[in-house]
Every structure is written in structure tokens, then in C-alpha cells.
Image (cartoon, rainbow, N blue to C red; front, side, top):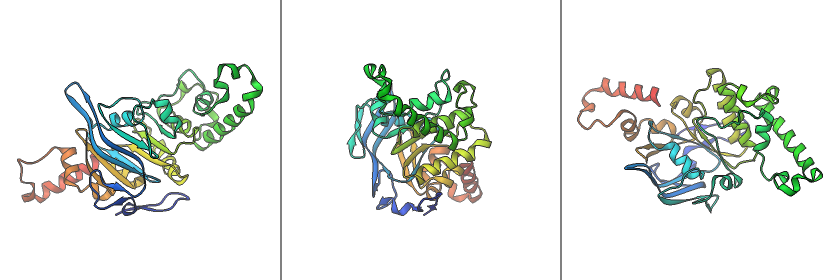
Length: 303
């Protein structure tokens, strides 16, 4: 069992998040997202085959697994960027199955991408303002009447400036997004996501391609999301980072959920070791303590 404390936030014990044993598909005390029987096949490959999955509210959940486990495909399905072969899922008790991505976002479930989607030929500020929802000026008729939307535009710009300052991008507000470094684009995408006041933030490999100098900054921002009352679900490979910030871990392999639980306990799970390093049915690892320890150390590095 672990307890993660966040700035200005309450500690979360992994035992407070679930009901019964910590196992694949276990019930959560207060789930914000529930998926049931979700599957997606590409040709003869079943990329996602999730029987049941619940994401706990108010916590940081890490979705981990080897390459090709189906993590990003599951993200795409849950956020409306892809359509499943079977299954249903709910967010805040409302069905999202078949709902397009823009409507999912409007409901408060926002995602970022492993490859950032900043609009390169727009300025940083314009990228931020695009993230605001319910903009009056988006209507063609109302767009011709500035007095209807000018005040809202000013409020959105002030909010964007505040967020950019938090992410240390305020001095870049007039620069084109194309001029930002990879890490700065990650920060911009996360800041833009917050323009819509989301309830659930889904981050697809937020640390991928990020300069080590910005890694701690991104970690702090993820922790702050939780401190501000948001739920976070993120895909990550670095178990050191996962252990540092995650309250709960879900492990996928070959499209299925093979383990769930406390970050420190999951690392010791044989199903997780098998998923990352291959199954060892033909080898008696129990007779070779040094070999077992070497595998655990390798797992620690790879996760």
C-alpha cells in the first residue's frame, strides 16, 4: 500500500480506491469512468479486449504495459477518436459509446497525445484560446456582432495568460507554436487542455521526448491537476515516475488488463513480469534466485 501526497491536496491510499481484492477489473469506490466489454480488432489482431475497467475519481491512475499492449488504442476508443467493435463505457454515469471526440471533450473528458497536436502556424495564445469551450463567437451570425462576444474573449485571454504563466510559457504567448521545443509543446498541450476546465485529464505518454530539464516541471503539473480536484489517467513507461505520482496502476498486455493495484505491489506481480519480459514457463526461475533478482531489476528499469 502506498500513500501519495500532493501540494495542497489530501493523501490518497490505494486501499481507499477499490473494493475487495486489487485484481483486473476490480470495483472502485467512486469510479469516474467505467468500461465494459470494450474490444477493437485490426485485421486479425485484437488490439483491445477489456472485459471491465473502472478509473477511480480524484486519483492519478497510470496505464502501463509493453509496446503494442493497446494502451493508446484504448485511449482513442474512450475519447471518441476511434470506434470499438464491441463494448460500452460511461463517464460521470453518462454513456460515451458512439459519441464524437468533440462532444466527449465538452463533457469534461480531455486528452493529450503522445505526438503533440499544437497548431504550429498559430501563436501560443491562439492555441490556448482554441481550448476554451462555449465560445459565443463560434456562431457565424454572432461572430458579426462583437459586442456579444468581446467580454468573453477578454476573459478567455486573461485565463490563458494565467495558465501560460503557471506553465512558464507566458513569454512565448506571441510566438508561433512551431518555434517551441518538444517539451514546451507538451506543456502547451496540457495548458490548452485546462482551458476547458476538465474533470478527467487523459495524458498519453506526457514525458515522451521531453528534455530531462522539463521532466520535473511536467511531474509537478500533473500532481497539481489532482490537487485542483481533477482525475488523471496517463500512459507511461517509466516506473520510477509512476511510483512517484500514481495512486493506482493498470497494466495492459496484448490488449487485456492483466493487473491492477498499488504501484509498488504491481511491480512484484508475476503477470506484470511476464508481460514485460516474456513468460518463462520453460524455465525454472525458482531454482535460480540470482536470475529472479536480475529480472526484477531489469523490470524496474524497463517500467
